[in-house]
Length: 212
Image 1: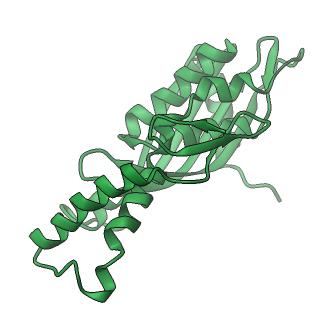
Image 2 (image 1 turned 180 degrees about the horizontal axis):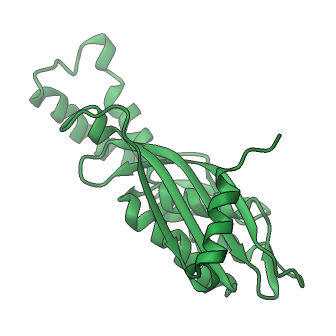
């Protein structure tokens, strides 16, 4: 049993991923106190039945939604790296993404598509989505999230190249501001072989195709 930077107990399982089991009561209490004050400032009555436990629930939700700060994405990859002479593209697509915009602290969500070309090492396939989660479960902007995933895989695996494409809907654009409910944002980041048109085109074709 370990204690992470958020102060809650966590347990590391066999593949290096940290799962939150219990929340630190002192930290939750401090965050909840702030939210109780915010409810009052909004004109609500924090003591009415429906809101009595809301500050605590929000505190726990925020702690979970930002638990990526307590994860080391490189360690996740290193926990399942294997020597393998495979030099073709490996693609993990349609990875669900849930994150929070750092500007308004509203969610953005969608899918990530990640590919790399091994250079003597491959990684357990489940580790790619775990790396996506580790970076997404923080206050983020989609552009930085895309680059962080790319850079982590490149620096840890040292592959021939990495490609990342993320497509998300941002509630800060749907619920407020410009209020465009059907807009999506697409970002991409590439290294190595993916900087060449042929490799990048193959990747983009693979993530857009559907298995019959």
